[in-house]
Amino acid sequence: MIDPIDLAGELRASRAHLTRITAGLDSDRLLGPKLAIVNPPLWEIGHVAWFQEYWCLRRSAPGGMADSILPGADALYDSAKVAHDTRWDLPLPDLKATRSYQAEVLERVTRRLEREPENRDLAYCVQLAVFHEDMHAEAFHYTHQTLGYPDPLHGNEIPALPGAGCPGDVGLPGGTFLLGAVPGGDFVFDNEKWAHEVALRPFRMARMPVTNAEYSDFVIAGGYSRREWWSDDGWAWKSREGLQAPKYWAKRDGEWAQRKFDRVLALRPDDPVVHVSWHEAQAYCRFAGRRLPTEAEWEYVASWDAGARPKRRYPWGSHYPDAVHANLESAGVAAVEAYPEGDAASGCRQMIGNVWEWTESTFGPYPGFVADPYKEYSEPWFGTHMVLRGGSFATTRRLIRNTWRNFYTPDRYDVFAGFRTCAPAA
Image (cartoon, rainbow, N blue to C red; front, side, top):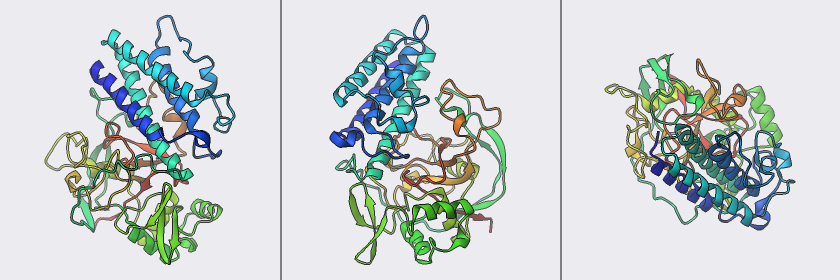
């Protein structure tokens, strides 16, 4: 378990990060339009506070479940019980009261950590609350993009460290691989538990994610009008959406441009393609004569090191991610050549940060799966979501690692997601 002082610091850092992301949300933007892929921001800010209070103060209170310090909070903010479409119509406290609720919960949790430094259940709950808040901070990025709000971190760009291009594939020998997290002292989610052997055939994987330039070849070739490259579900989805290119692409003076938050900018050819659904990634792969990696292949390439055991926690080794390794906690995507210091031993680049990467795999349990106390996190989504790996520019450094499994339905293009491709061994 992490030291209580460190845990308190992580709580404050996560809250400071979320506050930066949500600082520009006011007036009409506190509710926004009712869409299936976003939450009303005012509700979501309150939900984050409620989650922290529930897990860190109320659930393990002496004598049983304690009441919330905000009367009626459960009926407002319990995401497992409050239907998504009703969240815009709830009698939510105003922004000032919601921020006050956040602050009071944080102060009480910090004081409890000081009083109970040996409480392992509390330490688990605090780490859970930190990661939950980090995930919502990234979701607020998605909301800003979806609704065309300004970049929440504009002016805080982290310069990308340039590197030489590394096109082509790396060849991997395959064999027996331990997929998943290894038991130890670190917090991991239930869907990462536990490492188990899988057998992998030899294969090749692209060193870099698919770029805008590469994806534009697919678009120019009629990628959105040629049925043979799409699955039945993908074609039906594309037809409903009416897409002829990725959602945020548009022609401007005869050239492709891309909407990034509230600005329309020229499409940068060397950036990874982003805001594409799993259906689009699959269609591109058929066009290119390639395929998406399975999540086992992805984790193997990210953590494989022929000369080291155990497997790597990050592609570059065990060192905590910093600005030379990966594009995390920044204001936008970087070119696929950037961050060479973060290369995996396999030779693949940017397997952590920049854009989430779709895999071929359906989200499901590992052998022997047992739900953690937060039962709503993983199990309800098995079989209906697809796995993404690696994190994006909006992911926090403390959240991501090689074994981390993200998951979304295959129609979602609001996520900062791209992909890389695989092929049979030569």
